[in-house]
Each structure stands twice: as C-alpha cells, then as structure tokens.
Image (cartoon, rainbow, N blue to C red):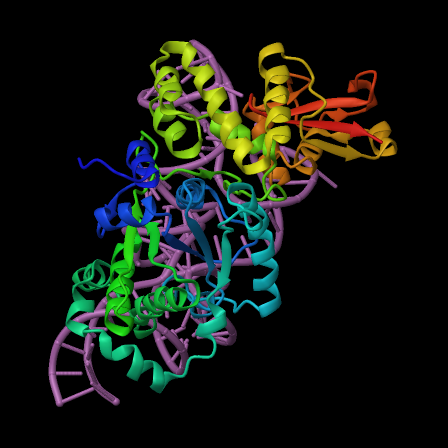
Length: 417
RNA sequence: GGAGGGGUGGCCGAGCGGUCAAUGGCAGCAGACUGUAAAUCUGCCGGACUUUGUCCUACGAAGGUUCAAAUCCUUCCCCCUCCA
C-alpha cells in the first residue's frame, strides 16, 4: 500500500474507512494541502439520522480534524423525487416546512461530530432543493443530459442488476444518478467542493458525478466510498425491535444509545472502535487483545466513546454510570429512563401488563401479557407471575419508585407523582 | 391496444371454498446457558378483552355468489412478461 502524505488518507486507511476510491493519490495530495472540500449526501425524510449514516459522518469528522472542509448535503430536492420502488402507497411529499424542521434536527446531531461555526474550515450544510427545485427540463437535458451516455448508464451496477433480475426500473429512478451527479457539480461551483464520499452502493453515482464535473466544467472531482458495515454475524447493523438506532436523543435516549454499543459482539469490538471512536490505534489494539470476559471492558470503552461523540461527555458518563449501577451493582439507578404515573392510579393498582405497556416496554397490551407469560416481565427484579397482578404503591420503594423490566436489559423506573 | 402471469403479515414466500389470524424461512422479542457477547436449545411473534374463550381488523380496492371466501364471480387499480 502506498504511503500517504496526508493525515486524512492515512487515518481512513488505518481505520478501515475505505472501500473504493477514484484516485487516492490525488485525494492524498489535496488532503495534504488542506484543499479537500468533500460532501456526503443525506436524505432528510426523518428528523434524525441513524447509525447507518455514522460511518460517513465519521469520515467527515476526520476530514475536518485533519484540516479540510466537510459539506453535509441534505437531499431536500431529491427527497421530493423519492424512491418509487416499494409499496403501492405513494410516498408522502414532505412539505418545505417539514424538510426544514428535519434539517434543523439533523444539523443538531451533526454539530456534535463536525463544527459548523468557528475555525478556519467550518462545515457547511447545504440543501439540494436550492438548485434542484428550479431546474427546467429542457435546459437540464441540454446542459447536463448530453454528457450522459445511456450506454454507460446501462452498465452501472444499480441499473444492470435491476435489468438482469427483470426488476422494474422506472424512468424516474433512472434519472436519479443524473440529479446526484448534478449535485456534485453544483457544490463544486458553489463551494469549491472537489470530492464526494458515500456508502459503497453510491459508487456508481459518485463516479458519474466526477465524470460530469470533468465534462461540464473541466474540474477534477474525486470520489471515495466506505464499506457497508455489518456485524460479525453478517446482519446489517443497527436494527432493533424499537427500529433504527437513532442519533437524535429525542428518538433514542443516550442511555439506550450507550446500551446499543455495549451489546456489540466480541468479534466486532476492534473494528467498531476504529470506525466509531477517535481513540488512538495503539489504545484500540490493546483493548482489542482483551480476551474472554475482559473484552467487556473494551465494550464499555466503545460505548462511552461512541456515546460521547454523539451526545457529549456528560450524557455518556451518565449512561455509563446508570449501566454500572443497574448491571454491576444490581442497584436502582435513578437515572434509568423514567415513567411517571399518577399516585392516585397506583393506589388503586394498575395491572402489570398495562403498566408495562404504558412505560413503553411493550407496544401493546397483548405483547406485554405475552412477555409476562414467557417469564420476561420483571417487577423490582422479580419475575411477574401473573400478568393481571395489580401493581400498587406497595411495590414502590421509600422514594415512590418501582423498577419495571422487560427482560434483563431493558428497565424503566416508574415514579409515582 | 392484444395475450398471459401476478399483487398474502416488517421482508421473502406457501395456501387456492370451511379445520386460516393464514405452512415455512429471515428479522425481532423473551427464557435457559453465559460475560449486558456469540453459538445453541426452548417459547412467543395482528389487536382488544371478562384469555383453554369471545369479538374486531387483515391476504391490492370495491361490489357480488355462498350457511361459509385469502381462496369463486364482476369491476377497478398497480406490477411483470411476450406480441403490436
């Protein structure tokens, strides 16, 4: 492997961020000179990103840390096109207000990883609706479309795979790569952007964008993709019963975020430490070597560091402390997620299944009942024998708190108020 | 426009008049074993309740036939393949 002059490319390779790259020497030169301005595009269909986005976010973070400039591009325009594959329901068009609100929320998450203000190279957040909304079809065809060869487009993986499998590919989708390519050029014009990063599935789109830049503007644009991160068991990471692992604390508490990382498989610990924390490599190497139960120490470090990046040092520390009390001391940590019930209701008594559902440990009464029947419902760490058992103030400790659990890992503190 | 094939639970995919809330797989949840890991085994996996039961909602949509429909008929919508 080549020796890299730039910190940026060296870090990316050492930590396992690189899947494919259009021209690593050129990227290295740009990065070494501090001239790399790179973007990653994100959908803004929801008010939060999730850990699937985290790999590229970390790349942008390293980019900024090594003296270059990141751009986070929100797909306000491309969101309007949407992905037409899927179900018969036409996707709801998001209003400009919703998109804007989502952008603001996402920006807050981003702000923990990269800095948008201050510093020599503040990160930029752009919205492709700004230029895509106003595009007119004929001019677009003349200015942009003429640079695309259908022959070439047909050979792109995204298209070819569909064709080979006889899967439908609408004309709308066929155009997606043109719009994304155009984003690249527009960002180059506006901000001097010269590189695009993305997931490995974005390779084709990124390459097309780089080519378009060369043809339209005679600009050299570069691309780099990150690998798709799966767990050692081969599953796509980040799926739980509750849905995605969100970065927005409103959607997923820092404590639960911490727990997600804490429950990493042994075989993934080293890789995840390299990808999702800033820890120096020698430190990671040391942690990775821990065998047997000691690997749990490494997992705690991973959980703390990953949570620190996303939610800040304070919340990460709190989450770690809550977990320590709960799991290692078996004590009642008052920082567990809480659920408040009216004292009056508790005096009368609430059926166990009902309270479990209300506290968010089950999504329906039926699920709560099944959970209890299966032995997974716990009241103050004791399995609940009968799902209709009334939980009353008598179960509360001196401070009016009841610990309710679904399984051994999910706990909620019910407080009588 | 013509001919044929198809739309089933989060996904894949059986069923093709009653025994269907719907086989199986994946994903998920819980229990056991452990180390808050993996693997393995076991149970659960539409909803409500007065839970060995009753009711509601659900097999693209709307009607119809029937004691009874995911299954048959009609119309409509959508997808695919071939022909023009």
